Image (cartoon, rainbow over all chains, first blue to last red; front, side, top):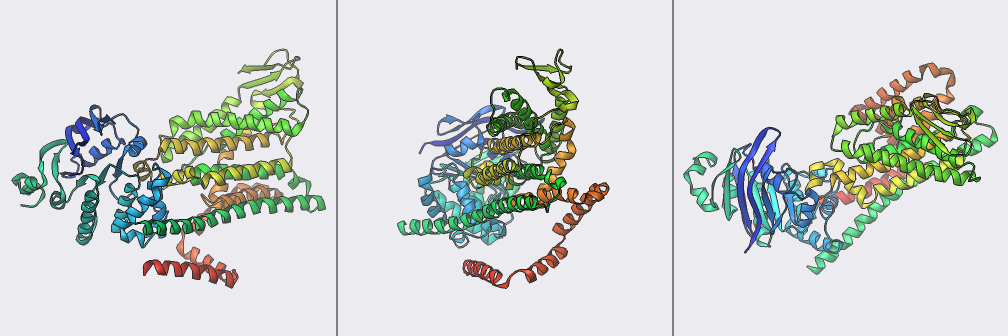
Length: 236
Length: 379
């Protein structure tokens, strides 16, 4: 198995605001790990810190045994962490295929056709729309495109930030099915979700973040059954 | 799997061909405008259709077209508002003037001297672009615009206190904030706020046109390179760009520095067109003027900016008797463009007129192709 990502006691500030207060967790190869929590708990901030968009003041982040807490964001991507930011950040003016090709910016040229085929295999919907302008896709398709684009760089670890945001329930099911498929195909996944029920149902392990700290952790099942989590996030 | 990959590669090839066509179309139009413009102006001048006044504007037209192209790299392709383009132009102009004067005793052939001056101008402007680009490119939007505006003013004010001269042994002398002693008028190169005097004009219409073509070549190729795509991706969505591993600073800086270098070259050519040149020429109004070319031509539309630059340089000359109303006309034109591009009803009306005028055959084939394509995709 082996650990892919280790986050050790990170502290992140937005100016004077202490957003992350000593969070530690790890992600093992082949797992789906999810971070759940209320709005403003620090879930997205944690992902941003891992991908190098934010810096932690103290603590350390290790990816495949190497410290990345001072590595530039663009280098982290080529090391094998792909981050799908919240809110379907796609290149609106480019076609679907161009978006995917942009995702392969740090990938070796000869790997691109293979990765592209893999993405189209996982997202048949995108294949039907290769030359459509990305901005005209539906919300669900845009989310798929954002995920597909992240896969183009051959990531060891895929970080998904709120993939279910603003999607109809049936699409949420589809997205989570794809997440599980990607995981089965060998991608380790770190998932941040508001939709705790859904996230816990697919996750191997889960952490609950509350106001910048980890308050609970366990397997997905355990947390789904825990009274605290049920009260706070699953509605009784 | 293999079949799938093959299929993908073939669709990829197809799409690249389409993209190649777009690129070729843009390049064709842009270079076409240059060549046609050159021929028309040359013929007009030799036949005597174009008066002396307008002929004097040939080099400035080329320079402004080149400036519009280079500013489009920052404003259109990189998506950052820069209000200090005249600053880079000034750096290039005065570097060029100094280099030309220093080389004059050693190198008789004017065109070669000019090329060397252009290279130096590009290097100095690129250095200036780099120095201000590094700190300011972490700023975004309005803040970046304000700092570039300040930069333009700083450069101009710096030129105001710069003194350069060649002494009797042809050594370059330099002073800051005071005149150089023991120098005759002839030996002066730069004299503070008075600027450069007694410049031997080296700019020719053909030379300026070649420079514009070079600028166009650089910008079009950059736009259609891998780097260009990265620059545009960051413009479209910075966070997405970061998330796929683009070095945002590097690409923003690349666009900024290349644009500065090209503006420096255009400035150098501009400076070689006048016998005297004061720093005040490169004030805020000039920066805004270049920006107006870009905005009027359509941000990101390279040949649109070229046409706007040419027209807005020619028109005030052609209508010299209305010179008093020049700024008024500018304002009115800008307002009309704003209304025209932002008002759907107005746009639709214009489009319907254009559709009527356009030759039917071409329109039909183009639209049918597109329709059948998108139809397939939906199905």
